[in-house]
Every structure is written in C-alpha cells, then in structure tokens.
Length: 292
View (tube, rainbow, N blue to C red):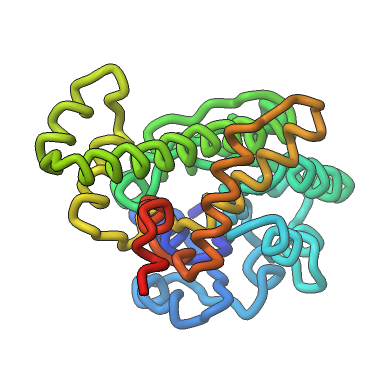
C-alpha cells in the first residue's frame, strides 16, 4: 500500500484526504487542530503530531493549507515535511501560494532529492467532495507522472502547466477572474434588486446569456437568498487577489481591475465578512454590512 502524508484537513483538505483513503492509499495525517483528523483516524489513518512526523516514511506528501505563511511552516519550518521526507518522495502542494513561495520550496526539496509539485486546484467544496477538482501543476514531468494516481483519486483533470511556479501562477490568474466576476455579479444583483427584478428571473436570464457560467449559477442564488455560508471563503479570495496584484507588479504589467476588486474584498474582510463565502462581497458593495 502506498503511504501518503496529508497536511491540512480544512474544508478542502478533509474531503481530498477522504478520497485518497477511499482509493486505497494509506494515510498519515496532520492538522493544526487535531480533532479534524478524528474521522480519518476512525477509518485507519495515522494521526501525527507534526508535518515532519507525517512525512517520515511516506512516499508522497499532499498539502492543502491557507497561504504562503502556512506553507512555509509545514514545508520548511522546524517540524516541516521537507527535512523529514526521504529522497524520492513526491510532494503535491495543492495550496494556493505565490509563485515565489512555490519555487522556494521546490529548491529546498530538490536539495534533498525530493520532488515538489505546486498543484493548486480549481473547484470548491462540492468539487472536492465529488472528485471533480482540476489540478494545475508546476514541476518536473517525471514527478507529475508519478503523482497521477493521487491526482486522479482526488480530481477529474490534472494539467502540467510548466516548471515550478507555473501551477501557482495560473491559479492566481484563475482566481483573479473568479474574484472579479463574483464582485461584478454582486454589483449587478444589487442594481437589479433595487430596480425591482426578481432574483429567479435574474438567474434564469444571466445563466443562459453571454455571461453565463458556473459562477453565475452558484453565486447569484446565494446572493438572492442571502445565504453566504462558505463555499470559498472571502478572506482566501482576498489573499489570492493580493498575490495576483503582487505578481502583476513583478512582471511590470498593470492590473487595475484586480486592484479594485482586491480593495473591495479587503474592505469586506475588515468589516468581518472574511469567513463567509466570497459572494458576501454583496453585503459590502450594497452597504448591508454597514447598515446601522
């Protein structure tokens, strides 16, 4: 049985680990809050005290944590996975990190004979649960080929984009578009409601029009129902837009739309909406979060 160390059992990580376990992989798991590991432990996973302990003896390491800071801790920290991983181990980092962070970890891994793939995903909770994630991967072809059984167990597609950092780069592009479209939908819904347009009619037309998309079909009903339970947290989208704006600056390209949307999301996060779905930006642009 192939042993996999899984680091980070949050909203996305837990169902991804479940799918690996269902596919017959043996799991060694770590999560900052140990109680999140209990359902997997009940099915035979080994719960570990540190990322290093989880990586020790594993053929693969999968990580799904929040940001660069968390990735640095679980990969390169005093109890990080890279130092404990044996030569030949393949690390699949599904976190949304900056390209610089991905390349830094890749260099540290290579120095120990470990392969590192930056492999963020397209999809949210429903896709994670249903093995419908799409992986966008940066790293060496041989490592990508070795990782395919795990990627296939967690998702429906996996694309190698290029060398280290390429997966992280295209994920930021993807989320810049997702965040910008969601902010535009919030603004459109606000105006439509104020003009007396029924929410069901709005969805029916937008979903079949030129702007129709999965985001229209998933976010407009949440806005109409004021159901902002998180599919993708607003705070995480704001972080991704912040990383995108920084990347645009690095490559000397203007990104005014991304900067504006990031500012809206930042304001919404600071207003206490960060733990809600990204569509809760509607609460900020409409003024509902500032009422009273």
